Amino acid sequence: MKNTVTTFQKMKEKGEKISMLTAYDYSMAKLIDESGINGILVGDSLGNVILGYEDTISVTMEDMIHHGAAVARGAKNALVVIDMPFMSYQTSTYDAVVNAGRLMKEGRAGAVKLEGGEKVKDQIRAIVDASIPVMGHVGLTPQSINAFGGFKVQGKTEDTAKKLIRDAKAVEEAGAFAVVLECVPSQLAKRVSEELTIPTIGIGAGAGCDGQILVYQDMLGMYSDFSPKFVKRFGEAGLMMTQAFKAYDKEVKEGTFPAAEHCFTIKEEVLERVY
Ligand code: KIV
Image 1 (cartoon, rainbow, N blue to C red):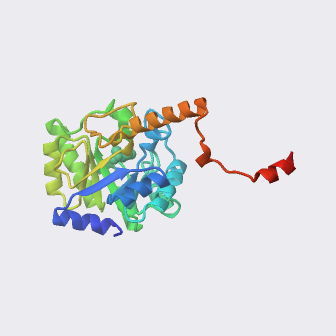
Image 2: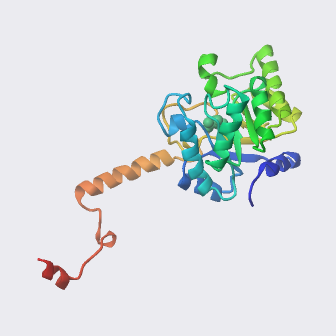
Image 3: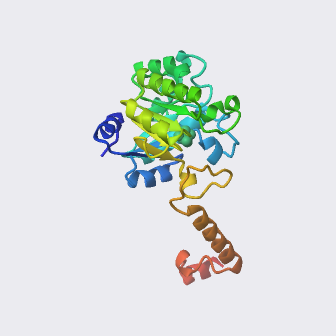
């Protein structure tokens, strides 16, 4: 069944948990989609896990459209959410609407995601008014990494916890259909999830959120540059891949691959006439 923003809202109302994973290409989107995951985020984390940057700052609109469209072609049932990259919405509501529109028209997004709370409420409202569903993202927002001074849990003090609640509420009031809570103490995330009417999707925010999201390379052990505490390895695909690559390397070098069953043939008499 096709997941839409309405599906997410109904799941929250019924107390059903929402599952999301990231994807950045067609074949991975297809596998995730076929597994029954509710939503796929084409995250700007592609800057790290696909493009090898140390952060998400350099990711462009073209990167997001290129990868987003590939994911959209592979996802038949999951709701595809595409991240708005750094500086595609912070500059003005006009830029926000134009760029969200491009992600929907060219990237075939079902919704867009942008980072920030009170500071971006006007952008969220303007995008929603243009009939483009918006997912918010508060707590640790990686595009603000230079302002935060590093990857840190958000909302641990009284002031920052109050700010997180204000941000989440601002996102809801501006019309977002859901909000990601990243790296937030579990008890606070649970309270926020109870107070909001829209679903919260947690990453490093505990089991009290209405849904969960992980970067697929993290949960499959395919990305070793950085492994946050909140990641659980659900498989060892990285290990399986290196074992397979080593076996291939060995067989190529020994001459045992390709074997007869992997080869095409020509009739001997035809070959004789050639030489
Ligand atoms: O870019 C991303 O992958 C994200 C998730 C971590 C929520 O924003």
